[in-house]
Figure 1 (cartoon, helix red, strand yellow):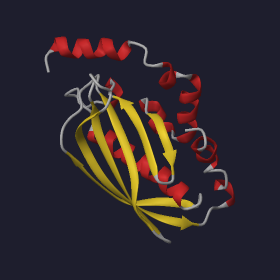
Figure 2 (cartoon, helix red, strand yellow):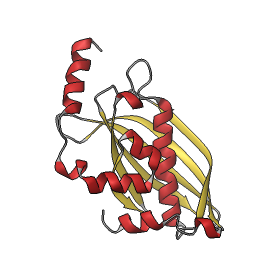
Figure 3 (tube, one colour):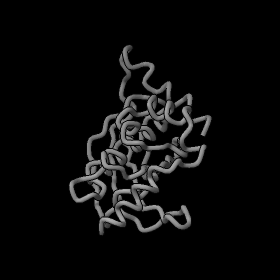
Length: 179
């Protein structure tokens, strides 16, 4: 990608997004739901035990030195969404990720927006498997463009909650009804 394209994308990135995605409530929600995703600028759009969706603007903090989305950031998004979904699907019992597998197909460049979706493949008594897909957003339509990554996340579920973790699902309960 040439410097002019990077500069153009950076200017687009600095322009205000739609009010629905930049409200203080939206930022506060992500800060409560998942601090690392919040720090990266992730915005949750749908939040339920059967589907989670959101978007991530690809900023410098998300990029590796070649100015493309860092693969570890894709893995972080996958683990976070699958964990939130599994926590809700288990009735807000404790969950723990035990395996993450991710394939990267294409890159997303600085200034792009990545769309994410997590859905359960298996919700059992003691394990859950979630599929998480990432797409580059088509800038002209705002819709899904090419898929950039796909992952499977396996989690132990229905683990006991200690007293100090009893409120771990409060933010999910609070916001699941609002999205």
